[in-house]
Structure formats: structure tokens, C-alpha cells
Image 1 (tube, rainbow, N blue to C red):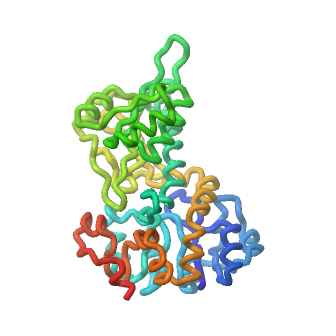
Image 2 (tube, rainbow, N blue to C red):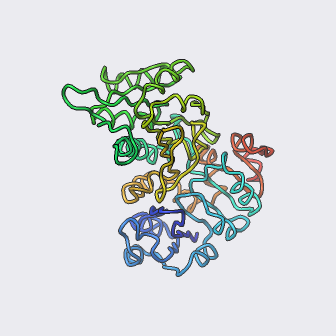
Image 3 (cartoon, helix red, strand yellow):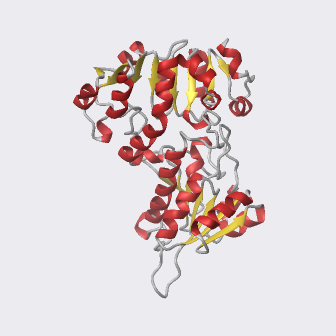
Amino acid sequence: MRIGVPREIKVLENRVGLTPGSVREVVAHGHQVVVEHNAGQGIGMDDDAYRRAGATIAATAAEVFAAADMIVKVKEPQAGERKMLREGQILFTYLHLAPDPVQAADLVASGAVCIAYETVTSPSGGLPLLAPMSEVAGRMAIQAGAYYLEKPHGGLGVLLGGVPGVDPAKVVVLGGGVVGSHACHIALGMGAEVWVLDRSNDVLRALWRQFGRPLNTVFSTRDAIERHVTTADLVVGGVLIPGASAPKLVSRELVARMKPGSVVVDVAIDQGGCFETSHPTTHADPVYVVDGVTHYCVANMPGGVPRTSTFALNNATLPFVLSLADRGWQGALSADPHLLAGLNIAFGKVTCAPVAEALGYAFVEPRLVME
């Protein structure tokens, strides 16, 4: 199979779909890899590193898309990239379609076979290709929140961990999954007062076992959200419904009641965000203010640390890339129901139920498009 790796073109997105080490593995399996010029520059890997791994370098993205049977990316294809997709071509990347009807319509029209990292499952019920980026984003959320709590950056002027004799900042984490647990880890390490809210008692028990008494765990209700969000210095939104739009847990009215100078970091923004006042931002222009509350809603947070993120992502995606290349997409998906869960769109049909529901498409069982 010919696998194409274009350079990411989303604003300040410096990750890359395959590292040179991953390319070497793919080539060793007998496949060809075409990498766009300077695709790995953002992670410190030049074209020569890819050539040594066995890749061919193409001058433009158009050449990559034209040559490849499968495109491996990181972020959702931008408008110009979507125009280069063709019927039956495999696209393997993050898609986050539920809040993005324009992208969904273009992918439906393309006829491409679109497999989304974020809906691939694991035998334990997790999301193995989303988890590494959620780990990075959860950790970055606290770094970003601490930065924007500083007065010169528009914040309340609070040090996250406080000092002896002065209260630390109160950090509230909505959702105790991968994002939430890693946010808790960093916030506790910095000495903050940390509260995590979740609707699963099993999740709360697991967090209690992991962190012990320094972490405050609360069953999530409307009352609990209202009480803790309005007294927080930093609120991290880390809720997720796989493939679907994130629930709006914090209303505009509730944001208006938060402390002036407090900070919101909405990690769920890829799926539409869990604050009613959230809208996507970029690393070039990461924040805006609503009712005195700073909102950090960068839709590709891990892109800020592209080297760490790319290697972490490739550790998770490489086995699936090899399976798709070795068996073909139909063989790979037939053999692995967890990879099959990643199929979102194929040959103009929407094959992911939450995406179909969110965007008003008819849902088609994934196996029907494989016949």
C-alpha cells in the first residue's frame, strides 16, 4: 500500500502523522510511504530523516494525496485537503465530526473511507488513540490555566499553589476521565486545591485510590457544578461522549457568576466544548474574555508540544496503521471490531451513530459499507 503523510496546515499545528521510526516500520512491512516536504519540521525531523527511514519526499500536499492509497494525518483535513480526497481513499486521522457539519458534508461528498482516531475503541472500553492526546491536553490545561491566572495575562493574580500562610488556587475539573485525571495530577503537584466532578462513582473511587485525600471528589449534579464553578479560580472542562457533541455543563448565566479574573480551559472544545460560552481558538490567538472570565479554548492543545505529542500518538496509532496497510481497510476492520468503531464515513455514508445523530444524517451500519 502507498501511504501518504502530508504536512499539517491547521494554524500552528506542528505534529505529523508518522515519525521516521514509524515510517521505517511501515516500509519494513513492504509498503511505500510518501511524505510531504518539511512535514516533520515541527518535531525536529527533517526530510533526510524520513529518507533514511525509507520514505519518498514529495514537494506538495497535492502530490501526496494523488499518490497515496491511505492518508495518515493528525488533525481533521482542512477545506483544501478535503477537496483532494477521492472515492475509496483511506483517511486515518482525528476528525471530531459532531460539531463540524461542513467537514462532514465534504467527507461524505468525497466518497473517502474516513476512520477517526477518537472513536477507535479498546477491549476495556477505552479510546486508545484519543488517550495519549487527552493525557497531554489534561496536563497542558493546568499549565495554561496557571499562566492566564497571572495578572499580566488578565487573570486574578493567583499563584496556583499559594505560599505558606496564603490559600492556594481552587481548581475544579469537570470529568474524571483521562483528561481529568492528568489535570488533577499536575494541579495537585503544583499545590492547588483540587476538586473533580464526575457522574460515575467508579471513576471517583478510582481517582480517590490514585491520589488519596489531597483530591476532593464530588458526584456531579447541577447543584454541585454551580457551587464549585462559581467559587473556582480555574475550571477545566474534560467531559467526553465518544463521537458525540460534548454536553453543555456550564451555562452562560453560570459563567457570568464566576469570579472576575478566573480562567476556563475547555479541553472538550474539539467536540464542541462543555461551556455554553466556548468557541474554538488557536495557539496564535488562544484566549478571549466573557463576563470577566478568560476562556482558553484551543482546539489542538497538544499541538503546542508537538514532539511529545507526535511520539505519544504514534505509539498508539502505528499498530492500526500497519493493520490497515497489511490487510486493507476491509480486512483490517473485519478482523478488529475496535478499529471498526473508528469508521465514521465511507462511500458517502455516515457509519458512526453519534455523528449521524448530531448532524442529522441517516446512520448506516459500518459492516454494510464493507460488503
